Image 1 (tube, one colour):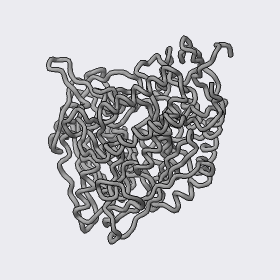
Image 2 (spheres, helix red, strand yellow):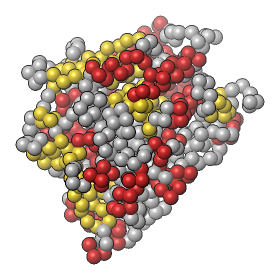
Image 3 (cartoon, helix red, strand yellow):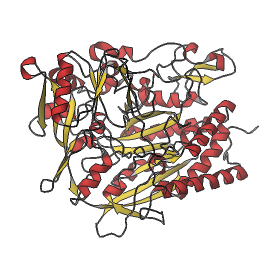
Image 4 (tube, helix red, strand yellow):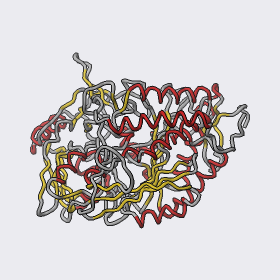
Length: 600
């Protein structure tokens, strides 16, 4: 038996063979330009049973279903107003869903116990109006990121920061405070570049039950600062106007180093790189630094961001990866995951994570290309060949995972890194599992200039993705380690959860983290006094009428999916040997740990 504290885990022959296989597959993905099949997030029955809505993973954190009475697909503002008016007239709850529905928490589900209305922006994506002189673009709410940046590039303009996944809608990006990476200038929050918005909100009978309001920066700042990050509870966004910049190129080099000095290098990396980030593999004791700055348009290069994880892949390969994970879970073998991690990570680094030098191949650093070609990647969900699909496509034996994503204040991030290193020292294999999902992505987010639910101080966004069991009663291998990290972020570091990711427990302290929450709630009451755009989840995370107390659902197995923080063994899986125990490094944590005995 191997000593769990020993390193490295790599078994030479197995690792070499796995690395060769992954390298071939990664290269195959680099050459393949086929996009995967689109799976609708809204489906309706042919009878009178109404419709259902879900997120892109086809599973909410609580694994519940969401039913609605109907769905509408407006393509014009007039149709959008008519849909809202009809719902207001009927006192019907509403929520908005995008084509891809990429928010993991239960944001898109309308309230009303199946009587609500789903408003989809799938067809509300036709208009991108560019004002070259003012350097602005006005977008329909459903416009997705890649068409946006490519359109403005045709006018010689660019947008500075976007999330890395291009399949998001612009209104979804704003509703959840999504961002890129960088502390320079206005920073990486997309909401910082909003100059105007048009919203459709409930109205009186005399006004036709719905009306359009226009919010302009410098004129309507109180409402605009609420609407910049709104969780969709203020009404339906119709259009968004964003400030642009002249087109530019970027130069990117990925540099891999030991993580021994990561805590002292994470801030200099931000100051020296306008678009820098760090991909940290704690289990491998490695960090990959993105050295990323703008360069002049005359700099040679036509590089592209074809990040492998966001490209359509062979369904057979996706199934093989999931089977391997499930096997390691069944065997309780962290070592098996570590062997696989070493191979996968080496292959990704060798292929520059799918980035290319010329749109086809990676030929070496630096990768230089236009901003619209490098800032976001994908989507992989618009074509028609079922043999090549998104890695999370649930019609195949696909990836199935949880996410824990928090913004850690700059002043505290070094201490957080040291704490995670301490956990790795105690349990070397425990973070090999998250490592298979690229490890810890660390992006920089600047303090917002005014958004009530935006970033409150300069921070590092830390993003963990990790295995989820298909069975809600089956615990994960090394379950306790990710739970301890989650609680450490939540309570010790007072970090703020990403609105579009995370398990339910991540939002347990959210109301206390936002001093401007009362101002946001006043705006919500003004625009939607009957809370027709709110649901149980938004009420809980915003603590409307004390609803925060309903966020945790205490029941057997509730801690396994993050529906509660365990306080009793039954919240874990005692029959499988998992009991509620204190944390290893953060002793105040209460986590589900596999132990030999139930005695405390």
